[in-house]
Length: 447
Image 1 (cartoon, rainbow, N blue to C red):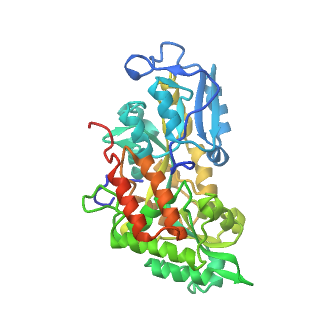
Image 2 (cartoon, helix red, strand yellow):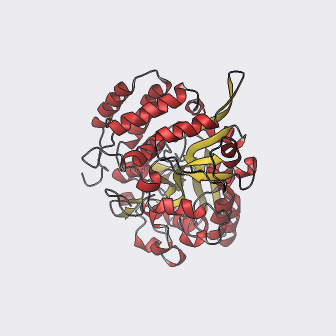
């Protein structure tokens, strides 16, 4: 891991805020916390029977066999009913409001990474899983270190990783070949700089009668990715994304200015669209339709999109400089609110179902969704997997700010104005410098 981060770091979730932790939901009556903020013991109150309420985003339901693990768990534990609540858009506000009142309408909330969970941990709203959770096949040494670390806040495991991602450029090999961007073996040489990537995008853009019919490069600039895209790109350029204090995200350096200027130029010259501003899935949708040659996003798209563009017709390219300096990783993790009356049952469901092999291997090979457990990486089918796994090992994650969600929202607003050309680069840098200076950049724990 890069200096300034804990070793083996890695990062998730989409909607109104950058991959913000999924808000709880469900129809059951809220539970109440036992004295001290934790639930009653398993021996009291029927904690190991009744409804177990699990909230997750709808997209995960489509990529993982949630119905299968529900049936399996209910069969093994008569008297238990697993109830799912699917959400499309959520932020931390709903959870914070409920949990501050000692109430919850979910027992497990899946989604987000530790930069989101830290806000709950700072308020003592979620449990610390402790060392006794990690036994047998899910002992700590069985996990991909990067992903396990992303549930850890100041030495305590507040979140269990369910799936992980790493930032890359996903490319359509056929379109890149037509653009003259592959070698004799069909490989795409990684662009070393954003100037080189600009030239790639230019060559891969196709226009007919003055209209763009094929985009050279799409960048995930939507509400679920803007901050991750900025951080991963800046990491590649300068080897870190901090100011000299090693803690404050850099928005004012020459490297930051160069990056924002490159993004603005790509849009201005017609080689990169801004459609992801309004539709965060636009880049992926158009890539699947064969209308985008390169897409800067989570690496998993390279597997997922083969169903549409052809098996073996996609590959991954490092974001400029990240093959040397490291990329950015994140997770989709699960937390348990202290207000849940089913804490032990929730832990059992996570151990028996959310972390089992069958739940993960299909998602790995079909959708590129990375498992948190090392045993699941045996016999993977795609030749690019070693590249993705190695990139994850050397990657970095966002810093742990108590006010991360506020920062994320501000970054989206300011960078979108800059990229469109509605606001100058230097003005944007100044606004973001002012914003980050107004926020709490501690974890909120032990302060």
